[in-house]
Length: 149
Image (tube, rainbow, N blue to C red; front, side, top):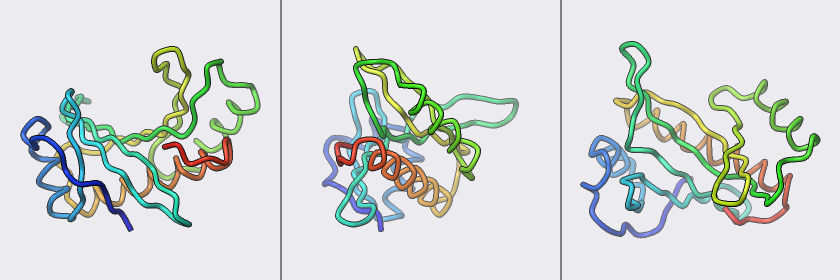
């Protein structure tokens, strides 16, 4: 079940299509200064996972694509070969999305990201949010045993 924090700020700061879908799903969210949506999701066993849904979209031919992502792990050093292998191996087993390494400030982050049609329906968005949250949280638990994200 997805739940969230109380909404803060103006919904209009982000893509209104996302706000409408999140409202339809009964999900609470915040909108950051960049206009991206942030959800705090309960996943399982009292664990939670932060999810971002980008307002900015990209194009691929006639498709308009939006990214849904979550951090699983951060390190001040580049990932070890063992961690990199684990992430790549899981990429071959996921139904939607993929692991990425992103530089965030001085840290390296393992981010699970899924792309979805920007004009998606509420059920598809909720399914992708849940998939991203569960996948990222499972990896976070495996790599750090913590619940930081």
